[in-house]
Structures are given as C-alpha cells and as structure tokens.
Length: 301
Image (cartoon, rainbow, N blue to C red):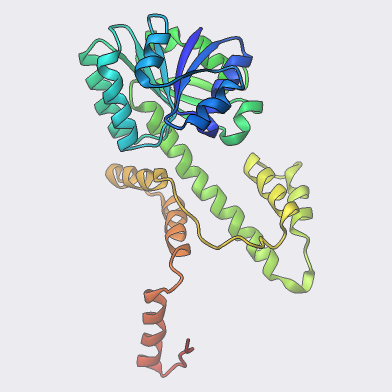
C-alpha cells in the first residue's frame, strides 16, 4: 500500500521508515529540506511541497499527518482539502485535541473525504518495537487502511485497533497520556524517597533492576527509569523543570466536564507546573503567613 507522510521529524520519519521496511511505498513532505534529505536516505520518496506529495500518490490517496497539534495541523488540513479528491483519506497521527478532530472530520465529511484520528504511542522506540495505535473513524475507512496499521503495530493483531468514531482515537490517547503523567510522577516520587534515605546508601539503578522482574510495579516506564538511573544516577546536568505536551491538561478538563474524580492525574499535572516556578511567590507568602500568626522564622534569600 502507498502512503504520503507529512512531517518528517524523528517520529514521522521513523514511522515512514518502518512502513518502507514493511514493503510499503512512502512519499514524504516536510518544510525542512534537511529532513526530506534524511528521509530520502531511508527509502522515502521526498516531495518538495504538499501539492507535489498529493500528485505523487495513487488514488484513493492516504495522507498521514505527523505534525504538532493546533495551528500547524489546522493549516495543513486546510491546505490539503482542495488538493484531495472524493474518497481520499487523511490520518492525523499527532496529539491533536479530540475536539479539534471532531471539527476537522466534519469538514472533511462534507467534502466526501475520510478523516481518521490515530492516537499514537511508542516514541523513539517505535521504529524497532512498533507503535500502539488507538484509531477513530469510519469503520470501512479504517479497515481499508489495515495494511498500514498492521505494519506499524508491534504485531498484526496486537497494539492497535479502531476504538470508535472520529475523535475517539485522540480522546483515548489523551487519557492514555494522563495516566502516563500519574505513573511517571509516582516513579519519580518513589525513587526520590529512596534517594533521600542517605544512611542506607541505596543504589537506585540496582533497585530498579530488581523491580523490573516479578514486581507488581514493573512496566516499560520503569525500564526507562532504570536505564536513565544507570546512565546518570544523580541526574547531573538536568534542570528540575518538567514541560507538558498539553494532553494532561485536556484529560483534567475532560474529567471536570464529566464530573469524574481524577486526583492523581490532576496533581501530577500541578507538580509539572510547580517545577517551573524557581521563584515561588506562593511559598514566600506561606513563609510570611507563618511569621505573621506564629512568629516563625523566615529564611532570607
């Protein structure tokens, strides 16, 4: 099966390369000429523009987007719209907000075009291990794309599936990432508690290795944490500043809209916000309040 890939950053290029290795023909476009050149070295036919990419594909066309959520996705979707023909399909494999996906899918449906949202997990390891894909869209359209999903997945019958109509793939991936926030926070806090028990002199890498086999807390995230601790036990050179992709926020928003209690995911998101405040006004006010009501000492800067 032939596919067009828009966005040849690391993940997009890796997905395209896995498809090529699986016997598919892939044409790719990225506004960065160096990205196109690198992709070409891995068997991906480069296109100099979206227009050229569409022209290079046989009908009915399938175009996979791996671009950042928000305006860039909107711009790409809107540019592709007049270039495509009835029966063509766009697959959004990025981390789009599912509400944006619903809007885009409706727009494409009005023009006789397919729009499939594919929540994609696997990161930089997907090229070797395969990708987990949560897919939303028309059942017949998704089925027609089965060869693509089977090649990208860890196995033909594992790690992927149509979870519902348009929007459901990105919604499921959003919640997946919210869960990921909570799991990562728990590992980070646990290893921090171990590290601060200095009199035991615990080897955190060793502990992680022990937990990786047989333990109820074993997971791929633990594998990665253990690997990181083996390379850099004290996290030297890493600032205590944690960014967020936005999906944790959207998960918390959904929980609020649905009146669902989600304290772990919410607090893990708040901790990321806190990590970015290296001059906390709130903590200064707390210290001042203790001094006001109880005469407690204030540590000066």
